[in-house]
Length: 116
Ligand SMILES: [Zn+2]
Image (tube, rainbow, N blue to C red):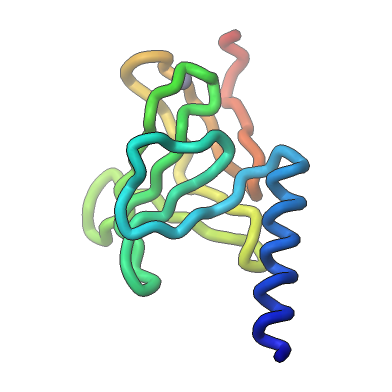
């Protein structure tokens, strides 16, 4: 069953990505109360995602929610290279709380400036 193999393989890759400290994507229908670190939650149904969420990478514990609804501003796009390594565009610039400003590029957080 090649399908099952593919699924196992992609699971293994996701595991390796997580192990290497890269972000991985979790598709969910509802956003869980407690978000795990180093995961981007894609919230939606049957391949249509309207919200991306992640825990703030600075460690402040805040949940960051990014609208992916078409036509809405601001709006973020979540892309995945080879169905893995997520990137979010544009950058995430928190105007409240810790005021972190970063990009998520191919599963890695890139800080816009050194603040801490
Ligand atoms: Zn933060």
